[in-house]
Length: 102
Image (cartoon, rainbow, N blue to C red; front, side, top):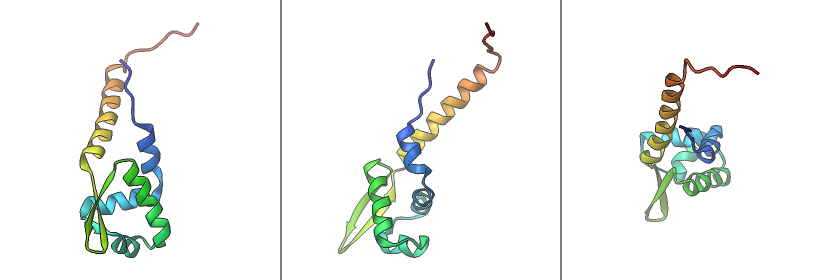
């Protein structure tokens, strides 16, 4: 049984600023202005990272007047966590398996 992990999603979350954004959004729904204040990142840089997170399906938007709010999609993170849990279980199960050297 081969366990696969979503490497594209790992790459998206591997960026320190994107991970910080996701961590903040896991606590509350925020607009870009809040995220600029919290992260200290420039608006354009933050917008690019939010686009990447949105395209990867990690966050979703909620329009509110002239602002756009962002929130995390917990199902996406739970799915990735489940993939790692499956991988860990495979490692536990296979702990005694060792292929002989030729």
